[in-house]
Length: 93
Image 1 (cartoon, helix red, strand yellow):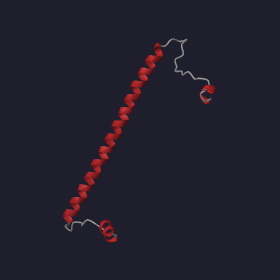
Image 2: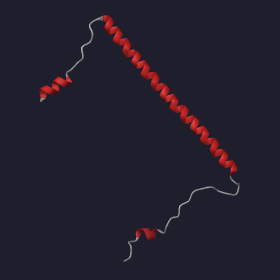
Image 3: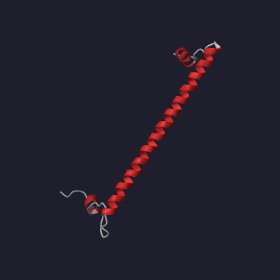
C-alpha cells in the first residue's frame, strides 16, 4: 500500500527539452491565463450591469407606487399574533 501512494504522489510530468517547445507551451499557458482573466472580467461586469439595471427598474417601480398612494394612508404588512399564553399552555383534556 505505501508503494502505491508513493507512486501516485511522486509523479511529475516531463518537461519538453526542446527550447521552442518550452516557449510554445509557456505562451499557450499565458494565453490561457489571459483568456480566463478576460472571461472573469466580462462575467463580473455582466453581473454588475444586471444588478444596476435591476436596481434602477425597482427604484422606478417603487417611486411610481409611492406617488399613487394617498397622503393619509400608511402602507404596511401586519400579522395577527395570538395570545402568548395560548401557545405556551398544553392542550387541556
